[in-house]
Image 1 (cartoon, rainbow, N blue to C red):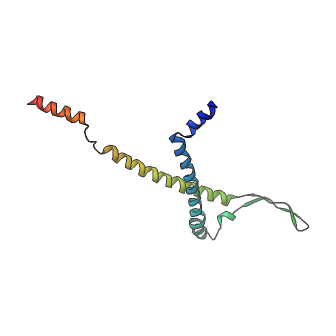
Image 2 (image 1 turned 135 degrees about the horizontal axis):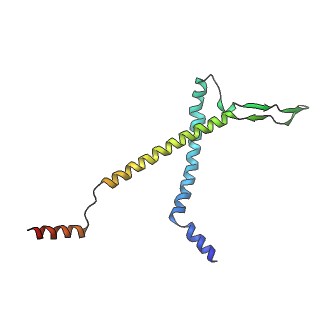
Length: 134
């Protein structure tokens, strides 16, 4: 039972919950960016390079084996187009995360630069110093 309590303590720590939320949101964000790349960005890029649909771009290493009209062994292919699609996904996701982190760092820097109000103790010490100067 001790290990159950230890696990419960571990699982309920703020960092673990924050990480879980981040992973879930990251997965959803990844799907959005993948759709953006596959459905919005890649068709015009394919059109610009001669009407190529990148997801269908493959290199056949071995032809499919067909007997009596049925495929016995499927073709062996290198799916270059899917690889290119994944690279574009990664670049856009990485750039998006970079922009988010840059915005957060800018906000944090502004918070650090803002002068903090003096504490009561500091105010009292300032008053004492001023009285001693007189």
